Image (cartoon, rainbow over all chains, first blue to last red; front, top):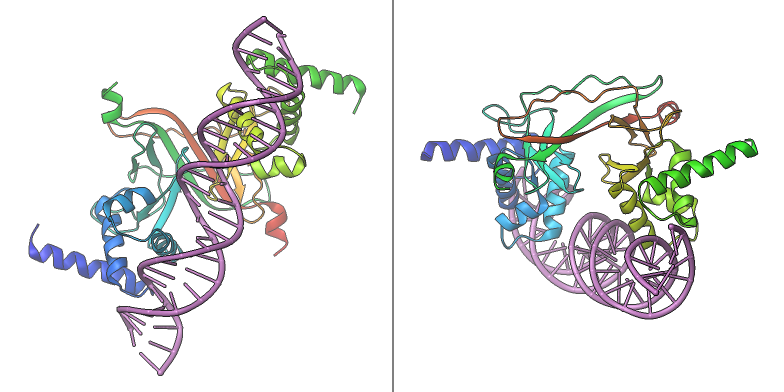
Amino acid sequence: MTMDGEVRRGDDLRHMLRSARLKVTPLRLDILSHLVEARRPLSHADIQSAMSDLDRVTLYRTLESFVGADIAHQVQGLDGVWRFCAHSKGDGGCPGNHPHFLCVSCGSMICLTDQNMPRVDVPEGHEVEGKQLVVYGKCPKCASRR
Amino acid sequence: MTMDGEVRRGDDLRHMLRSARLKVTPLRLDILSHLVEARRPLSHADIQSAMSDLDRVTLYRTLESFVGADIAHQVQGLDGVWRFCAHSKGDGGCPGNHPHFLCVSCGSMICLTDQNMPRVDVPEGHEVEGKQLVVYGKCPKCASRR
DNA sequence: TTAAGTGCAAAATCTTTGCAAATGT
DNA sequence: ACATTTGCAAAGATTTTGCACTTAA
C-alpha cells in the first residue's frame, strides 16, 4: 500500500466522521478504519479481538454513535449477534441496503451488495421503513472442511 | 367457542407434541397453545407476561425443544429479540418459511405467509441453508396514533 | 471554553448450567 | 421403572448506567 493511499484513506475516514457531525478522535478513526477495511459486517467480538485493549463500554457507545449518525448499519443473523458494517462509498464499499450472508459454522458475514432487496407486500395500513434479509448457510471454507 | 372446538384444539396440540416425539405435559400444552392461538411470533417476554408464574429457565428450554423438534421457528427483528412462532397447519397457521413484519414502535410481529421468500444468489462455493427476511416499520395502530 | 468522548466501576439484564425432585410413557 | 421434564439456585455473559477525567473544536 502506498503512502498516498494511506493518507487518502485517513482523510476519507476523517471526512466520514466530520460529515456525520461526530468528533474526530483517534479511537473512532481506529474503529472506523477496521470496519471499512473489513468490507463486511464485524461483530463486537471481532472488533475487540482485533483491538486488544479497547474498553467494551466505549466500543458499545462508539458503534451506537456510528449507527445513529448513519455511517454504519447493524445486522444480525440467526445467532443473535449484532454485526456492524461501515457505509463506505465506492470501491467494494457497503453503501446501501442489501442482503447479507451468514456462515452458521464460523460466524463470518458478508454483504451481498450485488443483490437488490426484494419487494414485499404488507397488509393494508402497515408502513414499511426498511427490510433486513439474511441468507445463512456455510461459507466456502466451512463447506469444504467437513 | 364450542366445546367441540376446544376438545379438537387440545387434541391437535397433543398430536403436535407427540408427532414431534416430545412428551405431552401441561406446561408444554399451555405454552404451545399460546403460540398457536397468537398466530404470530411471540417473544419470550410476551409469553412470560401472558403466563404469570412461569419459570424463565423452563421457558427457554421449552422453546428450544419446540424449535429443535421443528414445531416452531424463531425469528428476530432489528431489536435483537427472539420471537417464536408455532408451525400449526392450515387455517391461518404458520407452516413454512416466509417473511415477517416487525413494528418498531410496539414490537409486535406478524407472519407474511402469503409472500414467498425471494431468490438470492450467493457467491460461488457458498451453501445456502435458509433465509430470514424481516420487514420493519409501523403497524396500523402505531402508524395512526402519531 | 465547553460540549462531546472516554475509561472505569458497578448495576441491571439476559442466558446458560447443574442438579434434585416430579412426571409422562 | 426410567428417561424426560421441571423448578430452583447459581454461574456466566451481555448490555446499560453513572460519573469523573480527558480531549476535539
